[in-house]
Image 1 (cartoon, rainbow over the protein chains, first blue to last red):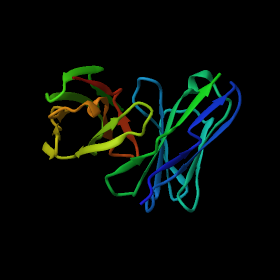
Image 2 (image 1 turned 60 degrees about the vertical axis):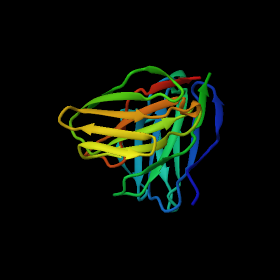
Image 3 (image 1 turned 120 degrees about the horizontal axis):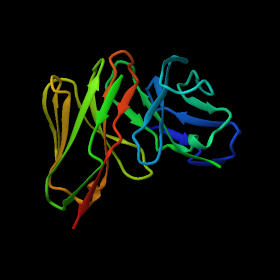
Image 4 (image 1 turned 90 degrees about the vertical axis):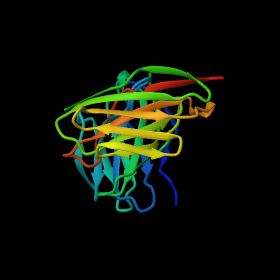
Length: 112
Length: 111
């Protein structure tokens, strides 16, 4: 049983640029959630995808968008990057109506 | 909305016991999770409580009181590898995938 895989592991971008982060969910999981974790803070919920549709969103602006593919993998896109977007971005997969969430190791994004 | 509070840091000696408290205020409650996170790594699942009472799993136990909006994670027989951040998270009743996390408690285990 494979876990959750995220790519890339580290990324440096310039303010104003766009970035795409990728997540492969755990085998058998059909729901993907994305979180932003600033240094020294707990993860903050960005949004969730189920059956290729967004069905829950946290307090993040529209420049944060995502996709889920038929194989349940997912992308997080962030446009017009700001310095405050520097954080660890975590992906978590789960099976809807089940308890467990499996987190990936995250992508460390630095905006300069 | 939800507000999750937990201490910032706790220090304990190897072999000792540490209790991490978590209080929450929520408009809807559908379970409380505890995760362990080592620096630069993924959060890993420790425990889940949805009913009042104590859940025991090896050296780790978690307790929940829904009426008090209170949980604790008990770590027994501390080992050096237990040095990590411990995250309390509450699941919203209206959104299956949404976990509201506290800021985490950094546990430092000393020899």
